[in-house]
Length: 197
Picture 1 (spheres, rainbow, N blue to C red):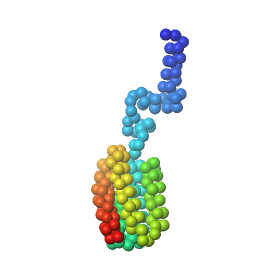
Picture 2 (cartoon, rainbow, N blue to C red; picture 1 turned 90 degrees about the vertical axis):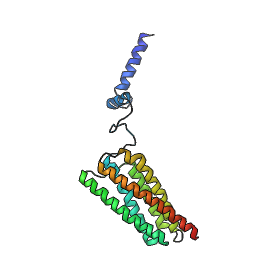
Picture 3 (cartoon, helix red, strand yellow; picture 1 turned 180 degrees about the horizontal axis):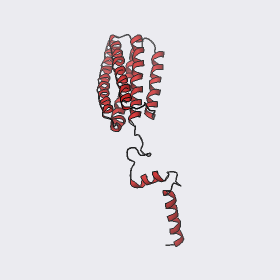
Picture 4 (cartoon, one colour; picture 1 turned 45 degrees about the vertical axis):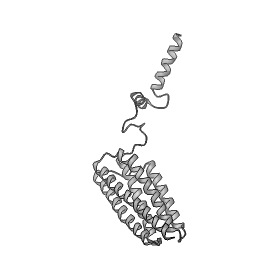
């Protein structure tokens, strides 16, 4: 083997380790040591407790706002009742999340998930405000089913696995129970609407 070629390969390898590749020395060491661990700058899709509380705050706040609109614009008794449950349950969960953040000395931190939920919630609010009065109930319930399915998946895949503080794990467990129940009630209310037409 050519001695010059061996030297070039060695230099290239050392250069990559020292950060020429754009990873930086600490990150390069992480990539050699194995997959990223919790807290590693390379770890993806991991949320801190502050970010998790930020996500739950936006999710709960959006449900309260949408429920307020549905209480005013909804027609069917099942829809109005569901909307009232949304306002009460999600307001309580939002308040509990804020209290936990205060006790733990955490601020509600931004994340991609929080931004996505905020954007989706804002779109639902726009759709509800524009919805034709005759189709409002169906529009609201369909949005609720979609949102609650999304939040259930988010709790299971991203929030619960990354939560550290026991209080936050308990909050997420309670939220999951309520969200699953809300989803069931929303399906029932939508079925009831379909039968009445």
